Image (tube, rainbow, N blue to C red; front, top):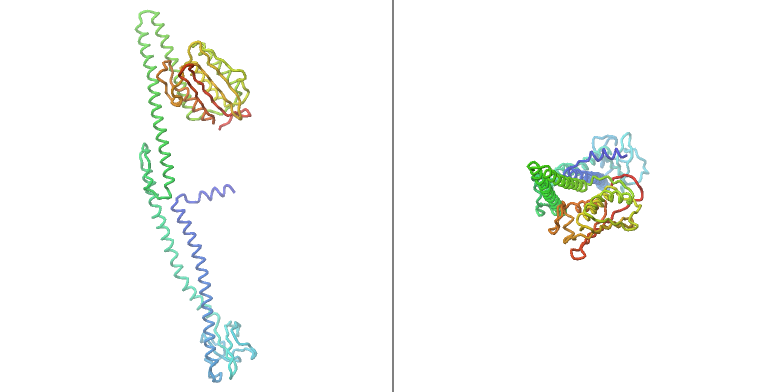
Length: 444
């Protein structure tokens, strides 16, 4: 059944013009056929009624005559003589019984079927007016065909008119499609809605909205590429200078110092590249939806960021009950938690504390990461790539919160940032992620 439907769908024309022409032509043929059949039957019945009226009129003329039958009849021979289509004879010559009632009757005389009209007369006995049914039918069918013939000749004209009309009506649509199809690849300007038919205005408005979204996405990607190039060029330039200084150093101590600076620059560049790749994967949404207990994810991430916390002399505090055994998407949760902790540690003052808390809601996991850093003046702007506020002089790429935002939206969660730049300063990031009830790997 499915294959038959697939073949039928493949046979249907994809052109709207062809489909409209076929639909209208089929409807016209059906209506014309029904009208032709009805007209033919109606004209045939009318012709036969007219022929009966002719028999009655001839019979009425004969009935008023006082002449003997032999003087009234038009045929002196037997009724089977078909030299004349219309015969007037006596009952005896017609081979009918004398008790035959008056009126119209169809009967077989000899070997021929005839239509008879028996006319009583005051004197001289009844007279029979008859006509062969074959001749009657031939005349009736010719008359009926003459009535239907104009309709039959009109059908091809109607079909041609339908094709021309549909093409004319859809010409603005085709012209609009040609205008859009011949646009340059970078031309994402809006389409003139008034240039199209009224019925397409909703579609054109939606198309313009999609063009605007695409233009915004293209502009965003161009800005991202430019910013990424700038962010990569800066550390590479610094490393190049550090390498030149190391080459020009006069003693081993200066060389070691320059190499130490170079090692730090390499580490920062590697961190930036890792974040760029992580953001690209988040935006492309290619991460597998593998699930794991949140407690295991939390322990792994804490183990990763602990050396960074020791380096910045920041204490990691885990609230009681945060190690939940709920199943969460492992790659996304790991990346979200790692970037949040990385940001919180880097921007916390020495001796500060970064607090991690987690709780379970109705089908969701609520994670909260708090720090006592300088805070954010504009939390909404902070989630855009490469956005860093002017009062933040610590090294960074401005990609952490952008990665978190992309991943949280990817898994169907939500992100809320609360920050204060006034004492006591700090930032609290609250993330909600849907939890699952079973373990495994799947694609959302």
